[in-house]
Amino acid sequence: MHRLNPTQNVDDKVFMGFFPPTDEYYTDLLQDKTFENFLMSDGTTKEGQDNIADFYQVTELWENMQKNECNHERYVQLLMLVKTDSKADFLWVSFVEGLHRHAATILALLCTKFDYENKILPGSLSIQDFKDAKIPHFVDPKISPKEQMKKIMNGDETSKMLQNPFTVEVYIPKRRHGDISQLMDSMRKRSEWISESKTRAANKTISRLLSIWLNDTLSHSKPEKRNDCTWRPTLTHTFTYQSPTSTEADAKHSHIHDQIVYQYPHFLKCDIWKSFIRDPFNISNRERFIEFISPERTKVRTKKIKPPYSIFWESLTTDVGPVEHKSRLIDVRHVNGYLIIPGIVYLLSTKLQKAVLNDRLGEEIEMNLINYITRFGYGMRRGPHVTLHGAYSRYTTLNSTKYIQGCFDNVNRIIPVTIFTMMLYNACFTYQKDKSTNLLISALEKFDYVASIDDDTFMTVFSELPRSCITFIRIITLSHFFPIWNYLIRFSLYLIFH
Image 1 (cartoon, rainbow, N blue to C red):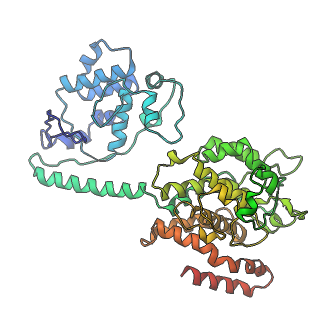
Image 2 (tube, helix red, strand yellow; image 1 turned 90 degrees about the vertical axis):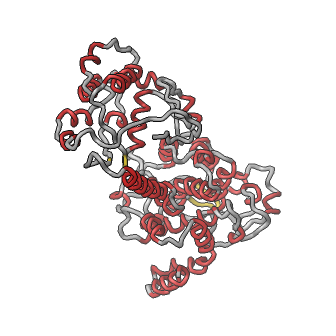
Image 3 (tube, rainbow, N blue to C red; image 1 turned 120 degrees about the horizontal axis):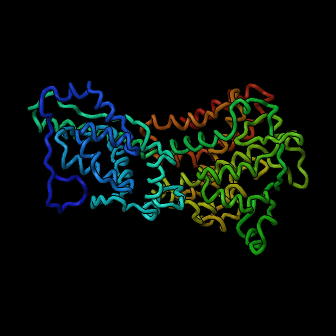
């Protein structure tokens, strides 16, 4: 049996029987209490290691062995003992499901790195290996893997991956003399099915990624509170409505701090905001921003009301107050956008550029897009609009254009798609009777049911819809007063989507 790692030039081979030594081997094995103890053994404990030695009938040798004080070295000793001295090493398992979890458990117990050369060297794993792998959100624990494993094996810390039972699926040959070619073909075909299934699951579509992100952020507020119209935040930050501004007009003020010129909420320049948009998927960054933006319900109440918020009539009227000199308080729609927009931008960008999310976090292109959308895009005009604010020349890579439909290239399509997604999200929280969830989440999930809607089609449709729907936006507000408009709106949107 040849090694199956990518290294092609290897001279050594491993010979192992595929079939059991007797016809009753597996029948007896599955009824054996020792085998059950073996399967449930925890290799991080001395008791678990003793169970392994019992099953392979090397108990006496294990007890008399001079064991290494180093935890992972002691586990290596046990493995070597089984492979060199056990007379009961007949168990050969071909994993159908659970292979990677099992392999990861063994490698962790050996504290070894694993590369394409298959050089398994106990104790070779280091923190640098984790950094080189560019694992998303990896934080240096300031302790070596050896010391971490020592704490786990000494019982000072717990590890779910190493100590909790997990399910595996395996082939058990029922006959001693079978057709090896047929067995290998069946195993290979089943492995291909599982691989294809996992590949499809791993390569999530844009709609699926957005659905996951929206569902994740939804957990920061309680469902029952979102249905309570009295549970509304009192927001204090202000902003000034943006007027249509050309790139030439914007350039005249480019030497001035643009927050002073355009009067968007001042916290969109603060350090907490900058830290949050560098990595909105980092739960610590997100919770720090949520704590900062969340107001208390009343002056005598200390418990904060956290976004995302549901939207009621009062949320957009009495809670906001009057407009004075084109300035007013931000409302719950803005706060929902501040929480959700950064994640949308990063997810769209990584899919469109076929990049790794961790490589794009904190990059200038994405950071500028987030700032442009939140400062000059979503919710910053007095009414529906199809024009772009002239500041795009400083924040994006767009060429000369006045309109949203001018965002047609790969990355800049993110602007209309993000704005439209936020419109739909807040519309759901406005018109849903049950606001415990947001219907956009389930709608995005169902996009995957239609095979013809790939990522490019999704981006094209969502970037065109804001322009198509803009003529109906003003009519929507009238539906509260004239019920017949509801039917006209639904019919119009039906034509657009179909």
